[in-house]
Image (cartoon, rainbow, N blue to C red; front, side):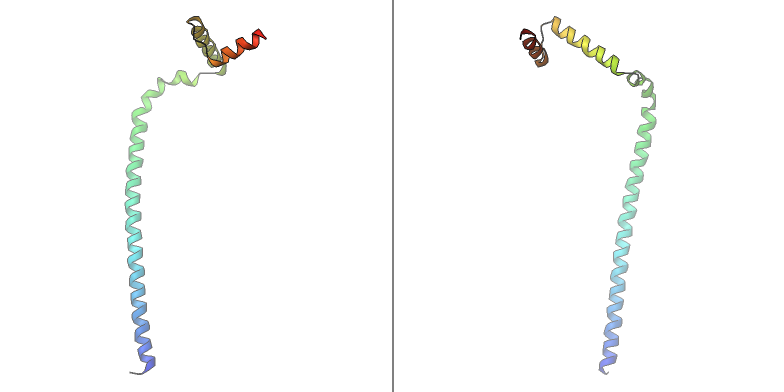
Length: 102
């Protein structure tokens, strides 16, 4: 066997090893992608189930969607009035009182 024939055999063997290694790597990647797809499918099914089970709650939260800035401000003013009536003052009230005295 001369040098060229030996190089040919070594090159063919190297190519076979390279192709087998590449095939094994691609198969491994495909298996992982398959598992990921299965997990994502399970997550999707769970989220659909949560959406279906919580759909009846939408009618209970309809009032929250109707909140406007004016209603929120009115509620805050009522809460502050209640706090002041029972003697609870926040820092803004203390500063407002100090500024009023000046």
